Each structure stands twice: as structure tokens, then as C-alpha cells.
Image 1 (tube, rainbow, N blue to C red):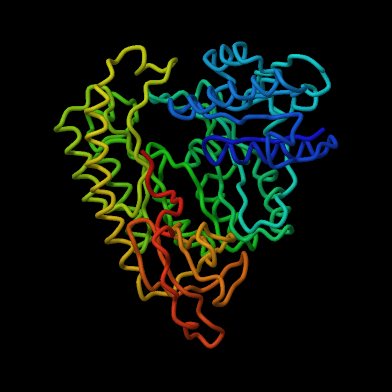
Image 2 (image 1 turned 180 degrees about the horizontal axis):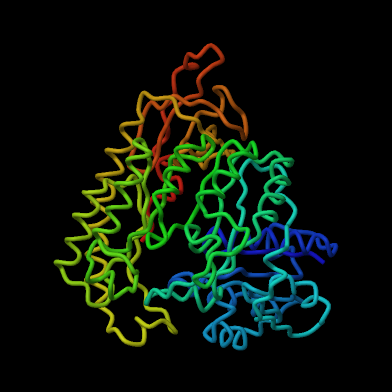
Length: 459
């Protein structure tokens, strides 16, 4: 069998794709690079917003045309597969294999069925499964929990991924050991709400550390860099910031989604915290980590958001001074309380507010990135950039960074980089030589280099 996987969505989906790919390889499948080469195509889907759902719908339509021309098994997995919306799509486009996020280990049974196979249960064995480590990569994701016990009115995740289940700390550390043995130098701990690790269904699990103590444990493993996502402010404790400060391997980078700067809108979102509570968390983080890099998520145009509410979001952005943000127009998702009970705002209004927020984000990102010019940053280079002759990577603070390929490095690795130039969404630098001095002058980047993909802004 020749299998090809296509992944949409979050880092958890990327982790799940690796998990399923490793299963496919264990069954003797060859992983190929394109649909044209494959006789099995599996699409890992996202259902958080409407845009990735539309992309899946279009792709499934294309795959149905391919199926009419040659033998092809089509599968869909992930969050959309768990929803009735996705299941209707699967029927319409003649999908053969459907796997929800809790049934990923059913991939073998699905392939053996030689027919239509749907697996939509949440199975406990998934939480104990340790996939093989990614080979030849310096970065790896490590799931510490699945699901979510919160019920934000806009969010479909509790439906698609089920209630929160924390993985055993022993399993987490065993998987981490395998990753380190494979050469991983940066690990990102994943969960829908990492701050709530070890507290499932509102109760502390016996023998499970808090998330802060888990950070300390992971920091003792010898891993060079530790990051984590995503944090829910409701469960954030100052001990997490203290653990970060005490653990050198943990990067001074915190992604703390706020979603709105208005307490009134936060109540409608059922976020369980106020603007003041959130700002208290930011103050605690800055107290322990004065040089912290802060990122957030913001939803623009939530139902009922007034101009005054939006101004509160803009003023909160100024008060925090975020380095970066993921920014989204509110997307009503069937099955969520906000879809059922709240009237959506006009798209033109939401788009106009998003554009104003983007301007704010660019101003702050430009200011924050400019402070890195003239400093030496530890950069993990992943490989070739889009512009020929350059490598791309990121700092410990998650800043996308580009360096000339011919000056000090020709591939992936962790290097000290002197930052010579910055834009709102990118740092440009050169590798520092063994003598501590910069290597030859940085070549001028072509204009298209500034268009490199960046995690700092999404509409």
C-alpha cells in the first residue's frame, strides 16, 4: 500500500498524523509525497473554524473525482470526522474510512475491513500509546493530555475530542526519552488546556504532578528546549511561571489566549475569567520572567461585541504589549451554544475590526522584534527557507528567523545568531562564529523573503 496524508489544523493534529503514519508504516505501507502516487489518501481534519472545513470539503470533492478514474481508498480523521457535519460530508463524497480523534488506533482494522469503516469511539488505549519518535528532526510534539472539560460557547473541541484525559507522567517521560534518543532538541508539550494537567473532571488524579511540576520533571530529562501549548487562563497558576523561571530548558515563551479584552464578551464566551483576572496572570508571568515573549489568540466580532467591547480588546493589547497574536474572525460552528443562541454580526463589520487589530498587532510586533536587533539569539534552524540560499528557523521565543545558508550552516541545527534586521513578523541574522564574532556580512534578502510563512498572524 502507498499512503499519503494531508493535515489541517493545530499541532495536536500534526502529532496525531505522526501517530497514524507510524501505524501505517508498521503495517507495511509506504508513505508517499503526493495523491497521484497513493492508493490510500487520509485527510486529518480541523473543525474549529469554517475555513478549514471548506478546504476539506473541496479536497474530498477532488478525491471523489480521482476515485472515479482509478482505485483509491479515501479516509478522513480528526475533529471534523467526529461531527455530524463531517459524517454527512463523508457520505456525500464516498469516504471509505472515518476515524474520530479517539479511535486513531483503529487504522489497522479499518484497512483490513476492505469496505466502509467508521470508528468514532473514545478509546482509553490511545492515551497509553507511545508512537515511535520522528526521525531526523530536531523538534517534536508530545501530547500530555487529550480533550477539554471547559465549555466555551464558541468552541466545538469538547464535542470533537471529548472530556479531558491526562496521560500518565510515566508514559510522557518514556516517550520523551525516545525522542531524545532520536536526536530531538526541542519538545512542545501539547494539550487543549495544559494548565489543567492532572485534574480530570475537576479532581486531582492520584500520583499525577501539577503542570508546573511536570515542567520541572521534563526539564530534568536533558532536553535542550521545552515549549507548551495551549494554556487556558482559568487554570493558570503562578507556580507555572515560577517553574518556568526555575527550569532553564523551558523557553521564556507563553501563549496565553485571551480571546477578548472585554469582560462582558468573555462572559458570553463562558471563558470563566475576567479582563482583570487575565491581566493578573500576565503580571505574575512578567514578575518571574521579565524577558518573556507573550503570544495570544483573539476572536474578533463575537456575537454581541460592540465597538466599546472591541476598543477594550485594543486597549488590552496595548496594556500587555504582545509579541504576536493569532487573530480570527468569529466563525459560527454548528453544535456550539453561540451558534444556537447568538446572532452573528455582519461579516463586513468583523472584517473591518480584524483589519484594525492587525494594524495594532503589527505595531507591537515591530516594536518587540526591533529589541532583538543587535542581540545574539539561540536559533533552531529547520532547513531551507523559501528564498534560495537561506535557512529558516525560530528562536527560544518562537520568533521566525532567517539566516544566509552559506555563512556558518548548511542545514538543520541549533546555532547562535546575531540579529541584524527585523520586521513585524521576522528576524534576519547571521550565525556567530566559533570566535564569538559574526561571520561575513549578511547578504541582502530578496523582497520575497519577507513573505515567508509566519505563525504570528492569522485572519
